Length: 339
Image 1 (cartoon, rainbow, N blue to C red):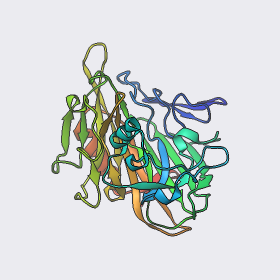
Image 2: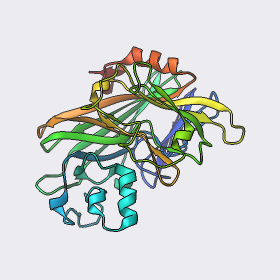
Image 3: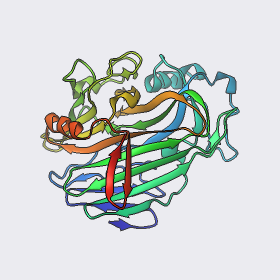
């Protein structure tokens, strides 16, 4: 374990990872871009970081808000990037590719944590067979008619002997909503040029009980998230396992490496999940959790496993060992998942 003013570096017998405190290489929240190392194979994450957190949101139009949802410092809640909001043809086209056209959404509280979260001071927790890092932050700005102050807590546990970490995101709400959800990237986006960094994507929740393996060539041309490879709880059967993974590839040799997977341990918490190719060589793996009625004072959370696996079968075995949990805690006895 190493710490400096900018970040915390975690090193176990199997992994290395960096958690930013300020001035990140890409985004705040989650695991920093390019830092997640699998010591067994030498492979690293190839996106913009892992388990990166975005907005606190809900379904609905922000049309009535116009341009008034701006904090004094310019870093607050703004209008959702939606094609109907855009008049410039290029921005309108990109909005369709980025967010689709089938379900309009809006922000409840901001800022967008990955982009604009102010410096944090995570707590480091050491145990006999694990190390954990806990980060908390209160949303600072709110949409019209809402108040700021929801508390976000991200707890990341790195167990000794494992090629993965466990993570929970928890929201303590100060607002009410019919369908409040937290948006993140699970496990994280994929940066590539014609599939040079990965060979395939695996989504356990599509195409039947075994899931679907999607070759990299499907992502050579941009497409919106509601065209294909999407999941919505209101239109899809809740799967037994909710796993999203990509098969890493060595850019120099073309040989496959391990899978990098994100396992959301209670499938029913997933509200919507995308796997779409945006312009600019990035596959977006947005996942929205909860999406249910919330009253002010309520809390909700989701728990995940994120890490390296040699086979899809290994992912499912790990899932079965930890299935059904939505939270993660540490105390004097160690760490444990909770429901």
